[in-house]
Length: 178
Image (cartoon, rainbow, N blue to C red):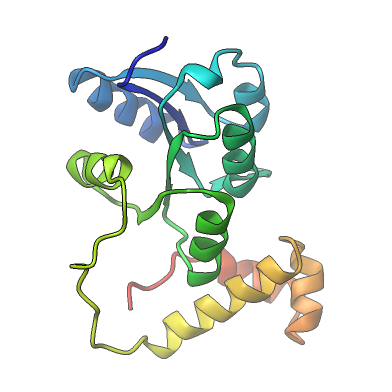
């Protein structure tokens, strides 16, 4: 699979992953699918794949580990982090690790392809003028502390002076938009 239109999709949501793969195939992309890190590690030709679409949460695995693994296999791969659990902390970390872009679910196939195939940041990107809501600020702070503790919920809960189950409940909720 040495094609300029080859994509690997790594997402633990089987229905979403398969639907995205079908949409990409309809647009003439060659698609490889993995539902977790161990399935990804079983794929031998990663160096031939040009693009990667990676979910942040992969069950017990982290999409951040997947980004590192993919870029170790193919340093020039364009990777898009696609997630329903977006936060500033994970966005920054994904970009630091080498993801070219970041997009929150739900997203259309057109948005995904636009973000995936962009080569450089645009100076024309609009800067939003609104402030984050209190709920969104809380979500961002929880994500930042969780990232600082390498995803360890118990350690993050101790740092936040919060019961572990309370933190787990808050993390299970989808973040508010703004």
